[in-house]
Amino acid sequence: MPGTEVKNFDSPDEVRPFEGNGKADVLKIGGQTVGRGTFEPGWRWSNNVKPLAGTDSCQVSHLAYIVSGRMGIRMDDGSEVEVGPGDVFACPPGHDAWVVGDQACVSVDFGEFGEYAKRS
Image 1 (cartoon, one colour):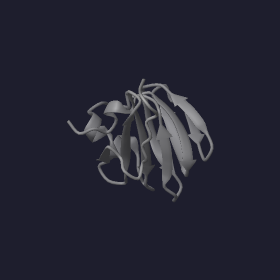
Image 2 (cartoon, helix red, strand yellow):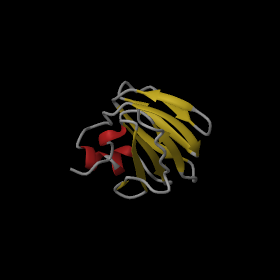
Image 3 (cartoon, rainbow, N blue to C red):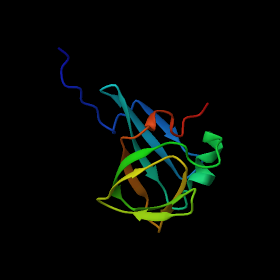
Image 4 (cartoon, one colour):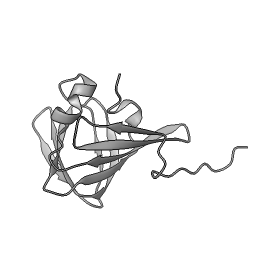
């Protein structure tokens, strides 16, 4: 029987820099991939991750917890929501997102983080 697996974001398995304005620290644990995104002020998915993804909008689903900062999310249908510290959100594929304000947004994502912001 396998034991308890423990990892820490201070020693990530992988670091994925965005095209400016932040990075994703990635842990592979328990057969899953968990990401901690640090999105600096000025970060926007359509500017900083779209060049890596090669899609018109983010096609990854997210199940995330906001540690600090704020993020706006606009779905392809035009609906918008803003999330902040303490919020947990589930976001399906088909969206853009951006940092709101002048504080970095830090989130921990338990969704489909496996290929998010991964260079090909």
